Image (cartoon, rainbow, N blue to C red; front, top):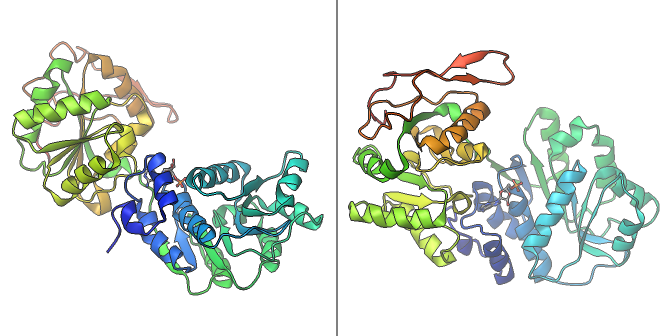
Amino acid sequence: MKPSSFAQLDLIKPLRRAVADVGYIVPTPIQAEAIPHLLEGRDLLGCAQTGTGKTAAFALPILQRLASNKRPPAPRTARVLVLTPTRELAVQIADSFRAYGRHLELRQTVVFGGVGQAPQVYACRRGVDVLVATPGRLLDLMGQGHLRLDRIEVFVLDEADRMLDMGFLPDIKRVLACLPRQRQTLFFSATMQPKIARLADTILTDPVKVAVTPSATPVERIGQKVLFVAQGDKRALLGEVLKDARVKRALVFTRTKHGADRLTKQLARLQVRAEAIHGNKSQNARQAALEKFRSGRTRVLVATDIAARGIDVEGITHVINYDLPNEPESYVHRIGRTGRAGAEGEAISFCDAAERAYLRDIERLIRQVVPVVEDHPYRAANNAPAKAPVAVFPGNGSQRRRPRGGRRPGMSAS
Ligand code: AMP
């Protein structure tokens, strides 16, 4: 069975604490699939890109391995090497190791080109547990005798496809030649063209294979609509929307924690089984709310954006934006919670006069106009402009008109 909480992942307490510190509630799919195998010491072939939670998927089991067999690394050596194509990724990965390893006393450092090498040489001198590196600088330091790779226990090759595109194959081969045969190897790539698969083949032993798609589902697959409504009528409108039996499992987004709590109480008065999940709730309370939602005991989960990060519940039929997000990217992340794995999903957004600008930003980002539902009992008559506004879509050089009036009548969830 796939673990649905970090508690089920057999992670040691300092790691569970660190995960709670950064606010993760449930493992992302790649974490749920990969971590148990990696804790057993298996090699891994991961088809996954940034944004899927892959860093924690490899960093957590690696930190566990280091912590369970703690010993000082020999001078100028490392126990773990993460090879990644760019400086930005190297820094990000090192930051993640630092965050997840904050309750463990391990040494780590990051080396990359384009900056003076003296501090990096100094950091490697005593030996490190985790070394995150880009290929060029790593080979420079090795060539000058500042680093050896013969004590590496775990090797991670990150973004292999990008490495190859950037012409790093010879460098990777040179690094590989210096690694001990006996090691655990993790290989990540967003794509698996034949040349990538061939490289993976040569460096992995009987790997577990995990493939995941990024968490933001293509918006095209999700039915979207917007309902113009006055702020004061949103609650009643939500009551109406929830009368539709097709709304089986709904994730409702509010902008604030307070708003989430208030709405949950109001829904209870309407006899709707709802729970709130947000940053002011304890980890246990959040987990319990999530479990009830997952099992179908509650029909509506009211969440803020931060609390909803990483939530992967199957069968969400509707995402309802009770408040529109002011970051347009959040809209894409929110609605991506429905329509998973080919299932039908519907995203319904409430928009009051003050949120018109947010809607425009969203439409610009997704390069679509969100169809307007005119026919509903709380339609804000003077909210919708008398004339169709013109939305300018950057990039295609043309202007498109917002479809209006009676195109998608009613509030059907079809
Ligand atoms: P990555 O794909 O490793 O770059 O991670 C993408 C983003 O997801 C990062 O901002 C992580 O902090 C975040 N993240 C990773 N795992 C989880 C999780 N289980 N729950 C919520 N957010 C997560």
